[in-house]
Image (cartoon, rainbow, N blue to C red):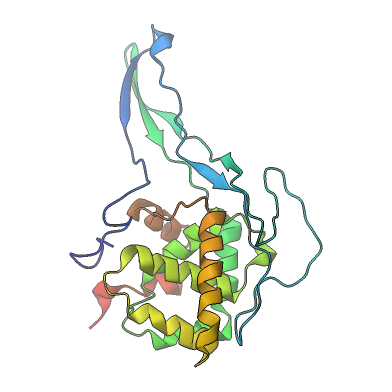
Length: 247
């Protein structure tokens, strides 16, 4: 991930969706040179709304259909590649000097308070609690990987009430896919979800693919975005899961 160890970088081997800060100096006498906001990607519209549950992996319980502008619920076997644009980056005035002003481009995050609330709710799930307690060495669930879980929730296009335990583990598995060189520890996720039943694993990977598609294939998360997510509630106990602090 590039945060704790030399061979880890957040963002798929150094890839980074975060645009970061860039500066532009404008002469206010020439409005034609004003920079235009750039579009950084797309919001997902596809969602997963069914699952054949395993022993401890409920998917989405039947609930009344809700409608939301710009979002469409689709059955798991009928995904569409339709998507809506993400919020564009914004430009803010950083300083003024005579007839010139300096603009700074700021990235607009798709993470909302409701995604933090979903994450906190799932942390109370007994299987999630047991898993985090088991991972004392933070091999699979350090603070950056858990930040990525929230980032993925924000991109998945699901309603808050649709998120279940399986979504937490799919997002965490995907975060390990993206950031970890050692892929063996994440296999423990299957033991906590399904016990010794290996027949459920193909279903898990099918649901994982659907989850990725619902995010519009946007699986990279920058270190900047992880730190923004942590800054929302910096005293949260889960951000103490820092490999640098291990004895």
